[in-house]
Length: 340
Image (cartoon, rainbow, N blue to C red):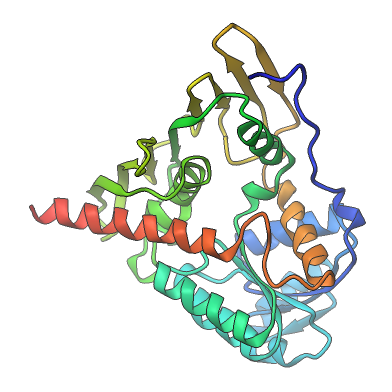
């Protein structure tokens, strides 16, 4: 049943989170946006950055107002002043870099995906639990106020039992981009497909059945893929991702009594509409600030760490592993279809 008004977001103001000293592994695109968002919206301390190249680390530190630059990841992890490490290295380095942070006794926030497969994610989660340090997959969408309101609508029965998810995410990338490199675990699934699959498993649960097809790119990765996911209870999701074309990147969660339509770009701040079968409609709208909203995940992690949590109630490690299990099954399904 549609409420009379949208629920309020329960996400606290990011500048209310207790400040911790952050160390960043990597100096790429996402690291820059993460630190910029922290600088603009939080009291978190931009303490250290590590790179395989000291000049690269020093340039990043100057541009982003980071206090200390290290020419190796090991030096950063050995610094006792670092409270929490943000792993912003390529996907296929997440396992080694996250485990190194855990061994160093650091709390760790790993850019999505947590690993390149569920097995890697399980290793990271188990190591963090054994070491007694906090671990989070930085799937920032789930920490946005928008998604908190959607969660409340789903839990409150605003659209009845969720039955279907339809979501896509497609962008065009040039030939030299890292997403087209097989040696860096490129392709559309881990970078882009994570978001539609996350939404599907978040709304419907982990699928019992997966079918999928992919189209290869000349570089050896997939260019685009599509999958249908069916849960044991009959929920059905259709998801797609591409690195060859720009798609609407919109999503719909359909329920027995209505639907929630998330405008493109669905995984970023922006607009959504919830409707019921009687014609009722409520609209959430906000500035589409894109990755400037990365601060929400960092503030949530800081609050969790200070309160003694070892994982996030918003994105538990089991949920990260479940999403990767589904991505693994999509990969297996596309490979099987290619050889059939």
